[in-house]
Image (tube, rainbow, N blue to C red):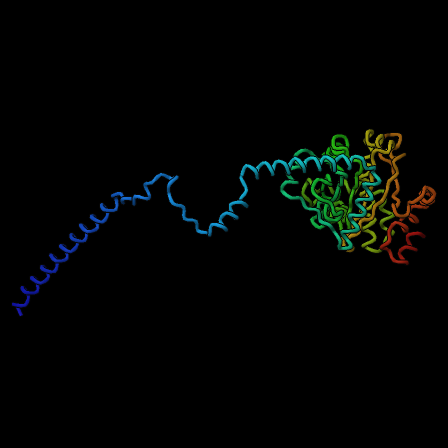
Length: 361
C-alpha cells in the first residue's frame, strides 16, 4: 500500500506536465494563425487589370439587362420632374384659391350644406392630399369658411362637412365660447385670409352647455379656468332660463340651450364694428349651426345682421330662423311676430306634440 502512493504521485506529476505542454502548443498554434491572417492575400492578375478592361459578368441575360437599364430613370431627371410637378400643383392651388375668393358667402354656405349631405348619407368624398399637394400648401392658405366649434372629440369639423386640408379655418373650444383669443383668430381669418363665412357650431349632448346649467355651488368645485368658462356660458343662458324650463324633453332642452348659446356667441362677434360693416355690405355672412350626432345632420340658422347692438353698444337679443324655412322675407317677418314660446315650439323639432303644445301655450 505504501508503494502505491509514490507511483500515484509520479503519475499525477506526469499528467500535469503533459497538460502544460499541450497548452503551450495550443497557444503557439493560435498565434501562428493570427499572424497569418494579417498578411495580404495576393490578388489574381485579372483583378489588377484596369477597370475599363475588366470583363463584365451581368447576372441577367444581355437582352433583359438592356431593357432594365432603359427603364431606370436618371436621378437628375426625377428631381426635375418632381420640381415641375410641384410648380404645376402650386399653379393649380392658386387657381383654386382664386376661385374660392370669387364665391359669395351664400355659395360657400351651400357648399358646406352639400358636404354635410354627403357625410350623413354615407357618400363622403374624404378629400386627401398627396405629399406634393401638401407641399403646394406652403405657398399660403385660402380657407373658404371659419368655423368655431366645440372641443368635443365626437365633433370632427372637417369630416362632418366633408372638407379637406386647407378648406376650413377651424377654432375649437369647449362650448364654442367666443373669448378674446377666439375673436382674434376670427378677425385674422376675415381681415387677412378673406374668409366670407363664419359658422358657430354647437352639437347635441354638449357637456359644457349642460354643466353651465348646474347650480352655482356645484360650479365652485370646478378648476378656476373651467369655472370661468362655465360661468360665461351660464350668463348667456340666464335670459332664456324660463324658456328652457318650459321644455320638458331633456333632448329638446339640450338642443335649445345649445342653440341659445351659439346665438349668444354670434352676438359677441357682432359687437365688432368692422364685422357689422362687412355684414351690412354683404361681404360676410355669420350663421349658427347645430350638429345632431345621432343623424349626422347639421341644421343652419341665420341671424339678423341689423339691430344686433343696443344703444349702449351691448349685444341685443336676436332670434334664429332656420335657413330652410327662411326662403322669403315674408316668412322671416311672420316668424319675428311670434312670441318667444311660439318661436321655441317651431325651432325645436325634437319635441313631441304634448311638449310642443305646452311650450306654445
